[in-house]
Image 1 (spheres, rainbow, N blue to C red):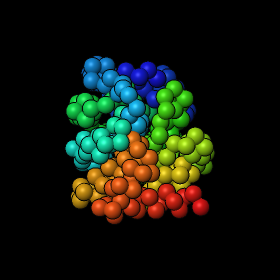
Image 2: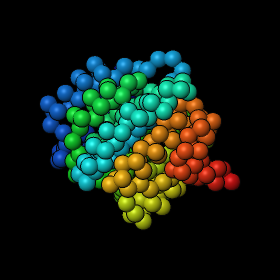
Image 3: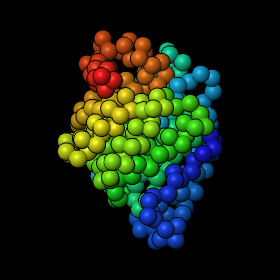
Image 4: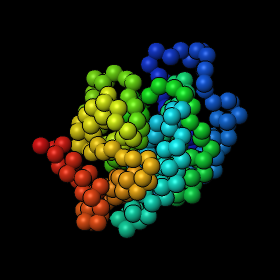
Length: 250
């Protein structure tokens, strides 16, 4: 992946390049997204910590997508005191569509990308997200990733294997689940444990619950455990993330 442009993430297993793209973005929409990514997503410079910000953008996710868009600026704020933050947006939706932006160092630029994307029906593609994080970390240092979603419709063993690879590379996964789907709960918790990260649920009707989780993950990406500890005193959610990370190492 280049560092300044958007591109598709891998290929879905078993999908032919010539297969009909039912539910896929129209060519004009993709062109607009690619053009915006080139103009609005320069690589953040300096020693900013790198965080992959991945979201499920299938049809049911539009309200939470909009919520995440409104909250993402706070991730940059909390990271400002510990070296800054570079964020890469990754999302999946529709029929085998999974895309990643370049590395973004300013919240308004991330907002500019997110507001162009509408959620579409489709199945989860979490394995492609994990593979992308693994591959991206071969090119640039990635400290952590966030995944926000409510479902899991994939092979659990494949996800566990990929999560284990990330854990061995020292890449922590913060898995944030809306709702209580049992399959998603088990898979998200497993991914978090195998990466040495943390799993938590949130209520989309209470924006503060997701905000605190995102701030905790951003703090870790920019300043590690010490940065999270600074937030934990005033945030039970961040304290819970730390406890989950400590438990995952036992």
